[in-house]
Amino acid sequence: MDEKKLLDQIKEAARDAGRIMKEAGHPKISEKGGHANFVTETDEKIQAFLIDRLSKVLPEASFVGEEDGQDVFSRKMEHGYVFVIDPIDGTSNFISAYHPSVVSIGLLKDKGPYMGVIYNPYDDMIFEAVKGGGAYMNGTAINCTDAPLSDSLVAFGTAPYYTELRDETFRILKSLMSECVDIRRSGTAAWDMCCVATGKCAMYFEMTIQLWDYAAGALIATEAGCTVTDIKGNPLSYTGPSSALCRSKGVKEIPACFLE
Ligand code: IPD
Ligand code: CA
Ligand code: CA
Image 1 (cartoon, rainbow, N blue to C red):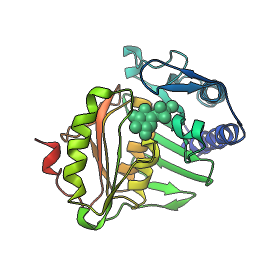
Image 2: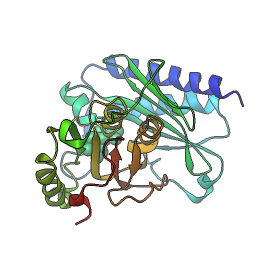
Image 3: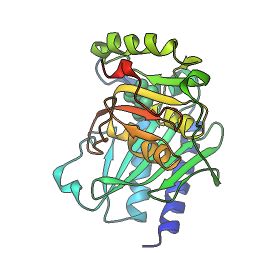
Image 4: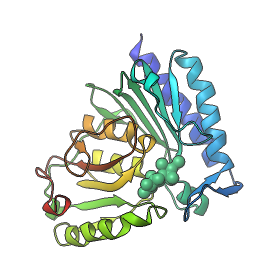
């Protein structure tokens, strides 16, 4: 397989998907169930577009995508290639024109991360990584920061529909507030991991995210020098939901508030 050609084709698909996002105007919105859990016709349109495009790029690949009932990693996907797609990561941002929202495409091989591409169409920023090959933003190598938490921002996420995770999330945040410069909430987990990968933040965490939220971002951050695990330090499964903790080089230990 020509790895470079494959990556280029995935990036081209991500750029085209980003164009659809940027040109969407005011899409029709539906609730998926739970508080503030939305999907728009653009999420569905982009996912269908990407599945069509990427199945031509790598015909043997299976697909997991957030929308249209394609959201399960099945046992038969444990071997071979699986594209994991979040057509719009940051749907609430997208609906409210509160940028960014990104296209996230992970490619798994035999149940592990192989390639990751994240595209922010509003700032025309494309992030990419191939396992073992470093991480890049618009073609330039990126590295996380080695600054300590005390000199850095921390990003976090918490989906409004996981009401049961709120108390624990805000307990951890309250503790981290005194250990870091300040806290940020972007509204897109994939983007948060790109921010750690580029040294804007020293750390990102979330109590539950889905496979499509982290498949690309965790690889990009890892290839930029970060350590990405669940919040207790266990490896991510790459088959389903997980908590996530993305630490840059300066955050050598998992902060105690995660381990209480
Ligand atoms: C959400 C975003 C958000 C995170 C949520 C995700 P969506 O994805 O990544 O930052 O806090 O957990 O569900 O719904 O916008 O694709
Ligand atoms: Ca998402
Ligand atoms: Ca989404």
